[in-house]
Image (cartoon, rainbow, N blue to C red; front, side, top):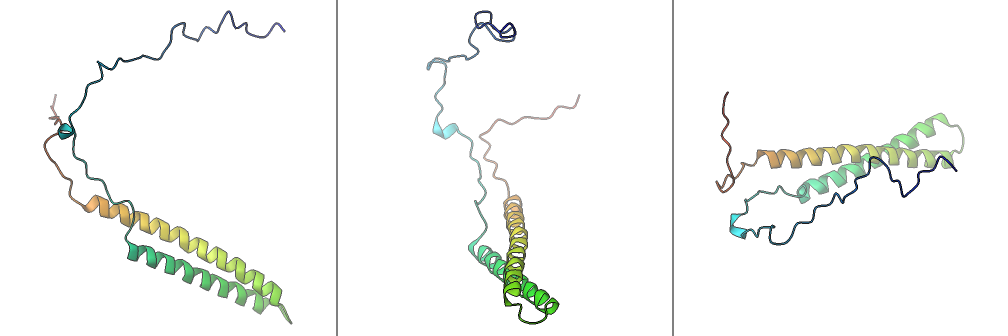
Length: 135
């Protein structure tokens, strides 16, 4: 085929030399642990009581969704509709628990971010400081 690129010619956008720079070990400085800046890391997650309350609210939301789904189908149907009422109760429970789960996750994340932002920043004075210069 005439449209193929010959590997010997190469592409004009390719570099002829290697683009990876190898740094010898002598140029990499060794840093003392005492000179590293101290950083305050926020907590990794919300507290256990707030997690338990979120779990309980998800269960309560699923229960309420199931009851609403069962009652909605039971009111619409005449006669014996146990299967349809059960299926709608299951769907209502899943939708209710899923909705409350999304809201509770967002609330827990917001609480965690709010807690990490409200803590005072620790300034040790070890890091480089830059003064702003007005031109």
